[in-house]
Amino acid sequence: MPITLKSPSQIELLRQSGQLVRATFEILREHIRPGISTAELDAIAEEYIRKHGAEPVYKGYVPRGRRGWPSTPPFPATICASVNDVICHGIPSPKERLRQGDIIGIDIGLRLNGWIGDACETFAVGEVDEPTRRLLETARRCLELGIEQAYPGKTLGDIGAAIQRHAEARGFAIVREYTGHGLGRNLHEEPTVLHFGEPGTGRKIMAGMVFTIEPMVNAGSPETKLERDGWTVRTADGRRSAQFEHTLAITDDGPLLLTA
Ligand code: MF3
Ligand code: CO
Image 1 (cartoon, rainbow, N blue to C red):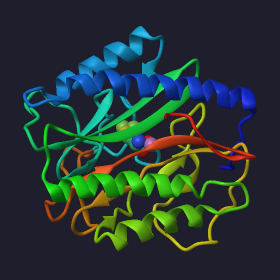
Image 2 (image 1 turned 120 degrees about the vertical axis):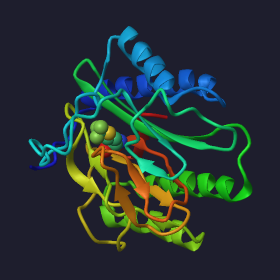
Image 3 (image 1 turned 30 degrees about the horizontal axis):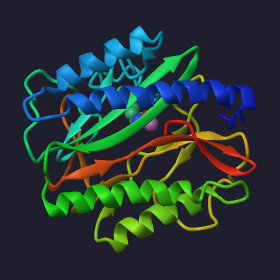
Image 4 (image 1 turned 135 degrees about the vertical axis):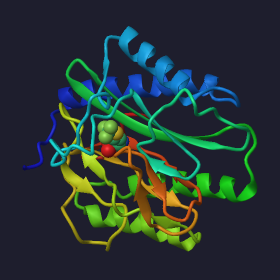
């Protein structure tokens, strides 16, 4: 599949979707505290998204290429809720209640007027310990450093290299198995955006591209393990992982954040 470049008017529609994702985070932020369940957060997000004329896109989603694989059921919820050692794709549950000192990655994808918005943020539940603060700060900075490379004429390898370099310099590890992606009318389009790599390699970045950058930063080893539910991805060593994601459009002047 080739990369479809987006026109300024399409980018404006994508920005409106991204802004609804952002607004949903602002609602959820007020509810993130010890005692709330991840299923309650999911219900709040779904209601807010639908009330604003949009629909969740993760709900019912079956990954491309895994279609028909019986061990991967459709994703059952509006948000991914990934607590502590869950790297990504955590399934919200009424049995999982947040506790003081936890971290929770919340990933939101929606479709508004036909166009997708997608972002992820990791929140501290109350006060977290110093190593966890450092993990959050590093993951956030990795995303920023990736975005700073997103200029026409640079390459996707420049983005991945900047992210990997910072994470590893701080003693953390980048997850390899899950990537950023192009998006538009579909959640997952070309290109695949790696969060590691070599400067100057990979596809050239061009004005009109729209894609996510969503590094997952592990406190310990980069290894992952997939739970038997077919979705929940945990660190193999049980240590924590943090993720931040933005959708951005490439303009002649550089990156335009659609979900900020
Ligand atoms: N932000 C992630 C991604 O775009 C979330 C996907 S959740 C899924 O890959 F359910 F849609 F797979
Ligand atoms: Co994404």
